[in-house]
Length: 498
RNA sequence: GCACCGAUGGCGAAGUGGCUAACGCGCUGGUCUGCAAAACCAGUAUUCAUGGGUUCAAAUCCCAUUCGGUGCUCCA
Image (cartoon, rainbow, N blue to C red; front, side, top):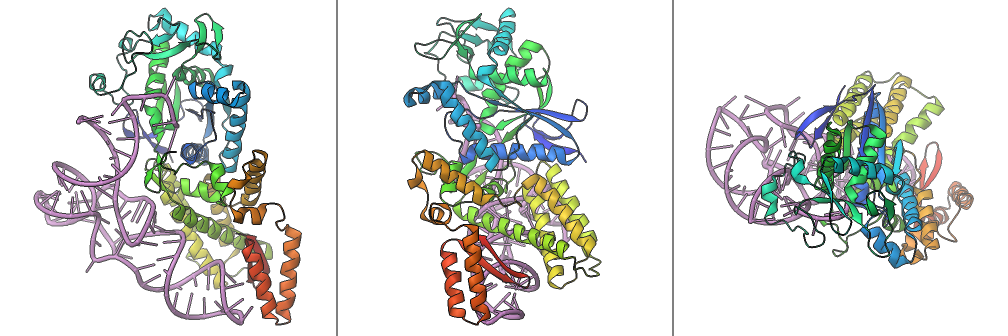
């Protein structure tokens, strides 16, 4: 089945195909490492993760390249304020970015490219543009792209250049440009800033040039898809197209994928609104990484998502239900107790599996895909309750769950260790006061270890056997207050961290 | 100001001309349990922002209005 995706460039849903040997080659604009990533950043990277996983789901290969912008105005500003060399500063936030990505189950791209390690490639690209008089040097040592030389400018964002001249706030005073909309390829050095001494002069790269240079370095002049947040469509991606195509005279990326922004509690997320959250903020407040992933993926990438704490609680419950179900089927497989089964179940599972795949291949409809899984969950739980689950149906269910998890990646419970890591980070940074009392009680110093919990659970089981329910309930309530939930079942007592 | 996108139950959300409007969470009742938890069963929108229109038929197409978001600023 082909994977169909909306293409910003054509304005239509189109099949995403690999132009080279069954491997989809795509580039994603990565983070600017000037601070910790926030949930808006991660919504984009999470949906790009689903894209790459969905590509692989169809047996297709993937070559995914992502840049890390490790030199820019904000980095220079923040590093200076922190009194650190920019290399040291960006290293810290680059590491943090990948730690957070890992926590959210985001797969690593096949290649990660840092801007500062690809300066010669950028310089060569600008030189090529200069040789055709598309790039020009202005006073102050900066180089600009002459938009007048690229008539297709605006084709991605569907901008009419006439239209944006009025009303647009264009920064014309700072440098000496030939036309207001010409954009910087290379910035002349300013006192005290990080710079490179190159054939273009002493300076540093403009923002857009790095993505053109690195995308083409790793993927060639033409490749399958280019991804990023919706804000990058203009001017960033438009400029990338202009620089690249003007230099190579070949089409740059064929397919453009843009992830829409999220809202937080119905409002734009911003520091001034007080609704700005990094992943680490949320983990320290006791929210689970898996629930954050599931929530950020609950609404398809093409739609705005409203991130709310009620929604996060709902997704926490949903993930928990999926995991309980998964463990139940797994335990049933181990126990090997099967029945003849319900003849209707096998075709139902097959249908839902097809629906799951079809939903993803229909422009990555994650909402519809997960609905199919819950249909199976209910049917199989009901069969298991009636002791009518066959071995074949249990196996088919596990295979479906594996397929589900190859996209959503929430079944394995790493939440406790991830929260512990966040706590360790907060301690190292002197930010332990940002952790909620519940998180500190559950995971902080003096919290219960597994062995201690097991002992208390055994003590309660003994009390129950002696019909000392008051004592049993007291232990259960104590543990619950520390975030430990006890469940009695036919197969024995289970406990889990809330 | 100009351009674009969206509005579906208590909340989130799928569905874009015709099956009882998916699914998740929540809530109510039931089964199970010493009581819980988990799980299951039943119930929970005659209705899709509002007003008009097209059609045999509209949540789905068209127009207007209201509200929310985004871009035109090196914010994912």
